Amino acid sequence: MAGSLMTHIFLSVYGISANHPYSMTGLLICFLFLFKGIVAYGLWFEEKWAVQAAIVDAVIGIAICFIMMAIIPFTVPSISFTIRLELIPLYFYLVKMQKIKKTWESL
Image (cartoon, rainbow, N blue to C red; front, top):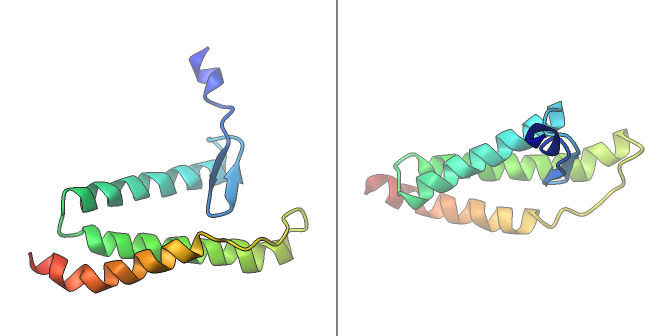
């Protein structure tokens, strides 16, 4: 019973959405959330590798937003063009992580 309830979940991040967690898109979204959790853990506990992982996380997020905004709407007719506002905080996140990288790693 509990297993059947878990299959009807709506997942969405950076414009990618899935109605089923066991599809390729759903697994990609779950992987992105898992990676974000690992980055958050590293930043919270001030791990040496955390800032570099956060920079990778920001770059992946910006790339996916750009692809979902500029490429996919013109190749898949069922997906319409939308401006991804996630790009704004992702940009500031990336800039901040790049600024503190040297200080963070020297601690």
